[in-house]
Length: 291
Ligand code: C5P
Ligand code: MG
Image 1: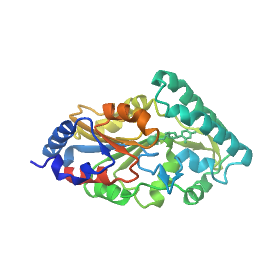
Image 2 (image 1 turned 30 degrees about the horizontal axis):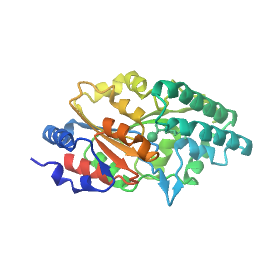
Image 3 (image 1 turned 45 degrees about the vertical axis):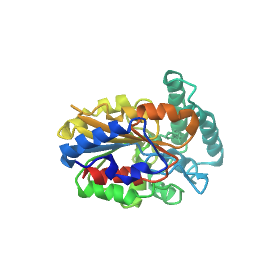
Image 4 (image 1 turned 90 degrees about the vertical axis):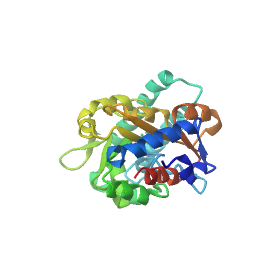
């Protein structure tokens, strides 16, 4: 049987594992079950997209809009102020989820209210994306194309903005038919002006609720009880909570920021932790091994 030793990328310097034997066992079970039992669930911002490039932070879905010309200068400053206030809370390892949760709801709610005030036009979103500095991680082409070729469903589960996220993967030419998205979608009026966000808000700490609301999706995928999960926040760990009769789950976590403070918590919850790794090299190697 092929084992962990057949994936040389798992020895990359960015890779940390608390229990390599466990990773080996999960991989063996998943290889045995076959790729027709596999589904992939991934976060978007800072998981499929890069965290930084040449020392500069890359934008999230929200930041793509925040920095674009569809937003007034005054509003830009307010959004930037929100980012500077709440992002440090998001990554603060000294605060509990219970403490952070209401503050995250506050961030998303205030930001969405500001975006709605800007009367953003739907037909300007594509340009905002193409002019932005967003970058999918190196190896994204192989990641998306390989999953598509092997008919493996990919769920992108994002607390970002669905319309922006879709545009990013569409412009990159990888919005294939096997991709489904759960995210915050914009609601436009009949003249194409943003008037609200649709449905219940998804923020980084309620992905479990979001997963449980989408039973139909997971019901369709019930013949795929093996999951590869990818995220960059501890909140992303609950993205697979809706999966029915789960057999195996392999969790890959990107640790991009506040590495020393958060390393132990990530090692305790993700099977494979990728430290300041801006590529999809390891997930791709795992996928090639599983297919
Ligand atoms: O796709 P993902 O679930 O990672 O999207 C959530 C990310 O969006 C968070 O990690 C947060 O830092 C970012 N965010 C932002 N601006 C907001 C709200 C969230 O950049 N107004
Ligand atoms: Mg993320």
